[in-house]
Structure formats: structure tokens, C-alpha cells
Image (cartoon, rainbow, N blue to C red):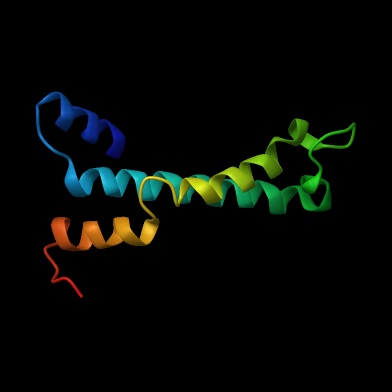
Length: 94
């Protein structure tokens, strides 16, 4: 719903300042948590990237590695939290 709101605002010509930061932070951190949960659920076999014993074709360790860069690209989660705090919640800049 957050992503749909950002798209809706853009279609209306509005600038989604803190809304885009909320959607990006929530989405990337959720993706990272899901990848880590899959990694932990599969145990030691979850580390295998290829071969007959690699579950899900080795996609889990690749997802874990890729999600780290997602939280950094286009603004780190800390920067996005600052944008949400200042522009969205109106908190003073610290």
C-alpha cells in the first residue's frame, strides 16, 4: 500500500518526500528479514549456492547477499529514517 500511495501521488503531480522513504525502508528491510529467515530455516544447507544439495537452486544465499546492498542503495535506511522524522513527523533535526 505504501508503494501504491507513492505511485498515486506521482500520478497526481505530488512529490512523495517521506512517503517514498517509508516505502523504501520498509520494503528493503522486510526483504532482508525474509531472506535471513529462509537462510536460518534451511540451516547449513542454506549456504549452498549450486549442486544437487542446494535448496531452491541456491537462491537463498544470493538473496541474503543482495538484500544488504538494497538497504544501502538510493539512501541508507538511517538517512531514510531521518527524512521520515524531519519531513513526515516534523521532528527537529539533530
